[in-house]
Figure (cartoon, one colour):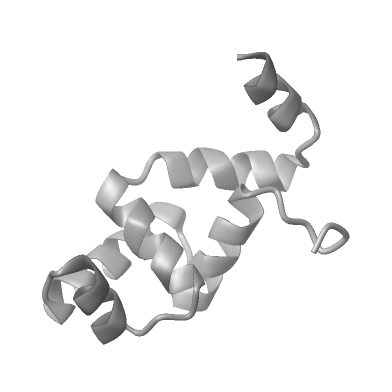
Length: 90
């Protein structure tokens, strides 16, 4: 509990907002977002999670909608911010 407070206390407002938005995703969507953030294609994500590429497309579409971002690169950027990785820290 204290660790969570300390983690959030050092976050910028953008990072806090990104974390809140990512936490609203389902656990499956968070998993897809994590793999997307590693630069994986839909087909690679599908293989990794043992689901169809069409299902991955649906998840990515849902993630983009929930995060209110235009594309998968922006979604990956939100995930990066949610981990508290600012440009200064990276």
